[in-house]
Length: 245
Image 1 (cartoon, one colour):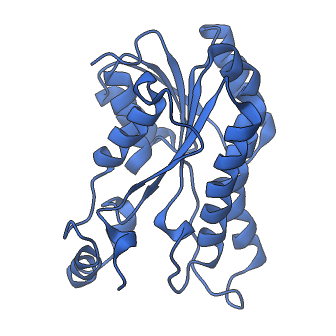
Image 2 (cartoon, rainbow, N blue to C red):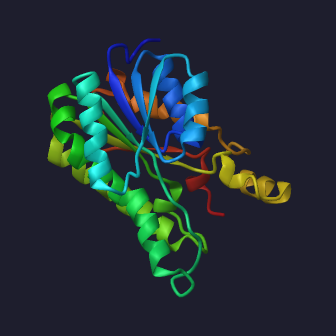
Image 3 (cartoon, helix red, strand yellow):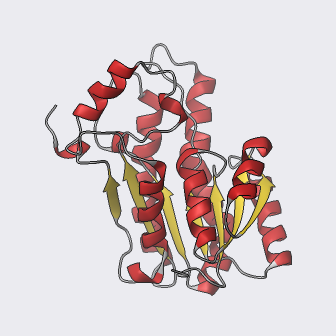
């Protein structure tokens, strides 16, 4: 498929995990992809292996000035932006009394504020292109587990922000979200096999998901195939949220 032929996409947090899979997927379908991340080494590996055009942009997505610089570069080089995938996140564990304030701010800045900044920087371009935005939320926006104080707050806010942005920028820009469940990314590398098996058993699918499976859902929502979908959140969780335990 070449659903994104002639399109320009910006993917944040694109150096690893779901972001890297999304960069690879969109590029394989014809998009010119700007991979925005702070990890240049990992981003270079993604760009080198992707089948298509991928440009790395060093960007701390919690800083408006860096968003503006990214926007200027894309417009100078291609003149339009059609898709924004807001995937970057930060994760720090701890209950409220255990979590340092700076950790709270970092998680919310990278996970929630960055989507607001991305839309603020690219609203004009996305509106002109009648483009689409897909934010990566989480099952943590809807179900609570110990230790995820800041992350759950950020993802819950992100899900609400997606609905609000869909209202604000309709009908020109479609804004949707995916809500992944347990996905086998680097965050699981330090988890013992028994812990992985336990979490997999909490899904109806009986396993952890793959980043590529989330990327497929993102690509669908970003494409014209989802032209009548906006303000929606698509769970990609193997049925994790529908279980009681």
